[in-house]
Image 1: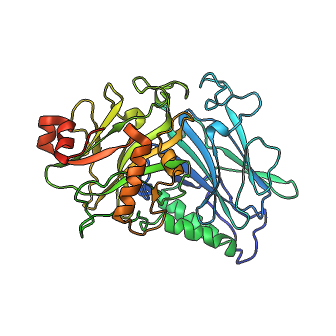
Image 2: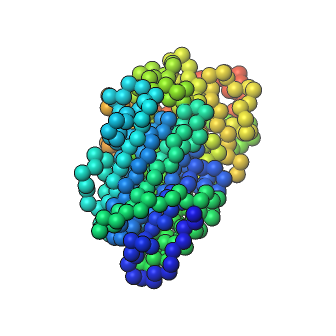
Length: 440
């Protein structure tokens, strides 16, 4: 069912015609036309507009997926997160079990159902998401790293949505007919604009956030072409994007440009993570990764310039580690892993376009006992640039990077340019020695 609605001008929508008319019309997975605004293709998410002035609440009912992480969040019309629910905080329905909560012994529970209420007034639900006090809201559902062999929804259908009006009447809306990403965005914009004032802000946000106009702020110490003389130190920065997930924190290094025979070598210690991709419970550490310190992390290579697409991401489970638990990423030309790469190195391709590249380290849901996460860096206030487009000064960047390194210790990543022949002869150690950088 496509999103259709009668033109309402500037008057308030009634429960009969207020959005959503179908569930989850917008799907973003970083593939094809949705590869904009710094996506991580190890995650997929779905968005639904919701009018809390016409509906008292929405009830979202679903089944926990077989995946590393699931999460819900609400946003205001401008795409600013209002409230969030991570999987470990979602109580299962009575008689069901959650594979993400500590009391669950196995991912194989026969009943895995949950219910969430969404609205301005909290009800008696164990699971509730608030919405902005004014204007339209967005409901966003996310799934990270489905188990091996599962679809991007983690083997569970998209959650059902039931809308409840002030008089108690309710209706369960069908899932939207799948459409190509540009068509879904355009259809949603038309629907929202048909609401007049109540939908204009949401439509404007959707149009701007999904367009190739997004880019992070500039980086310091770059030449006139936007290329750094050496990879800038990783620093915490909020990246603009379509429905930015506040639970994800990032370190970035930008202004990285290709040159003949040049590669980039990135080195750091890997936080331990769960072995869910192999079908194990979320409480079981991946072999060789150590105790679980982080629910999910990844290293990605994006274009720094609009539309900021991703060339590739290596999720934690796909990253090769040495016997001491350290990763070595090599950014090099090509679409597949080169034969000359060391066995314990992981491959990231240069983005095919000639613009500068941006490396992104993501952290999501650190263990309470793990104090060397990007989240700890952000809590300390070592963040530069905000979410705007201003350029970042050299001193500001260096100060933030030094603060991040002090907090993260061996888990802080270092990146250097290296001649490919030097790497072939002396490995990553030779690259770091030539760059004058002490290896982690």
